[in-house]
Length: 310
Image (cartoon, rainbow, N blue to C red; front, side, top):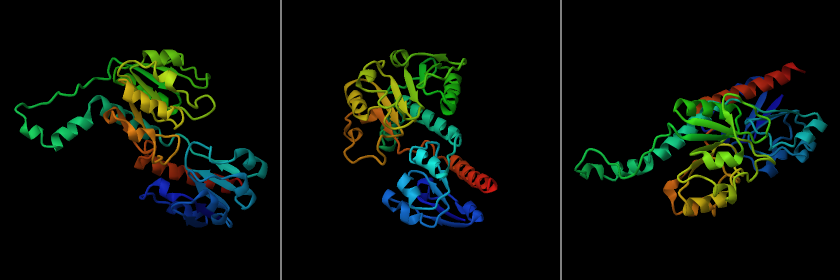
C-alpha cells in the first residue's frame, strides 16, 4: 500500500510522520498546489491531506481508496463524489479541544491585561526610568463577573464555558444549529447574546447558518468595550465590517481564523488604526504540540481501521 501526505508542512516542522511507514510505502510532500494533486497521487492508495482539495476529478484520475483528513472539517473533500466512487473519507475530531481553549483564554487575558502595552513599556526602558514601582496608565479589567457568551456550544465551546465559569463569568450560549439544548448553561437568542455579553467567543463551524453571522448590523449591537473572539472559522465574522467597527467604536477583537488563509496582502485588518484593539494569530489555536501528536495518532488509527476492515 502506498500512502501519500500532500501538505506535511501544515502539521509543523517538528511533526514525526514515521508512524505511517509501518503501513506501506510512505511519501511526504511539504506542500502541494491543488493542481498538482493528481500527479502526486497517481500511484497512491491512501492520501493524507489537511487543506489540499480532493475533488471528484482527483478521485476519477487516481486509485485512492482512503482519504485521511488531518482536521475535523471535511470541506476540502467532495464527499458526495467519494461516496459514489466508494472512496472512504476519515477525519479526526476532539484532538484540539484543550489547545483551542488555551489560546482562547490566552488571547482574552492578553487583551484585558493590556499585555502588549506593558511588555513594551518595560522593554522600551520606561519602567527603569520610573519614580514609582508600578504603572497603571492602561486600565486592566477582570473577566470575573462579566457576561461571557459562546456561539457554538460543541466540545470546544463547552470546555471554554467551563473555564469561563471557573473565572466567575456568567455564561450563556447561542446554538447556531438550533439543535443544541444544554441545560448547564443559559440558551439565548443571537440578538440577546450580542447585546448583553461583555465577552463573545465563537466556536462554530462555517456553514449556511453561520456565513457572515456577525456583520455590520450585529457588530453595532455590541456593548461598549465588548471583546469578540473568533476561534471557529473565517467567514463567520465579516472581516471588513469588523475592521471598521474596531476603528469606529470601543470594541476589541481576538481572531485566529480568516475567510481566506493565508491572509491576503490587502486585508482590511492590516489597515486598522486602533491596532492595540485587535489580536490576530495565524490559525494556530488547534496546533499545540500535544494536539498535533494526538492528531497524527488518530490518523494512523484511521488507516489501521481501514486496513483491518478489508
